[in-house]
Image (tube, rainbow, N blue to C red):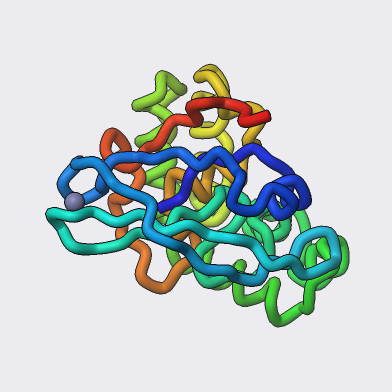
Length: 212
Ligand SMILES: [Zn+2]
């Protein structure tokens, strides 16, 4: 699970376990979850690596635990989502090639190429899901463009624009929004296709909007 954290990475790291984590209901049974330890993982942001604390939540009836990732990360990716998103927006959005985008983001070429390949491979599904979410949030209807990558980038932007009218999302930014609504699986191998459309259940609003 991903929660719509609006904290900067350094503030999140400094707060450690004192971050005001939300406690969403169980994604499977909608019952209450309880905090159940957690773990630390690496995150690369602003040219350095951080060890961040990720709490786990446990559902008693389901007997499973769920990691509660902050929206600035994607599952199984080292780099923060804004870095990954900037490369995807430039390359899949058709504004430049992988190499200049990787240079600008300060990441290895092969890493950037991997992100873009994965995104493009899912672009039609992602674009359709983001377009549906945009419409659900009151945005303009969109139909697939000739280039699926551009369509997916545009649809993600439209969904975020529509979500920005709701409290809290503007501060999170477009790519944290994309991470939150995809459960951190924006470019994951095991992405579940209609994950955005089932939004009612998985779409966690940013409340409280800004933990001080
Ligand atoms: Zn449950």
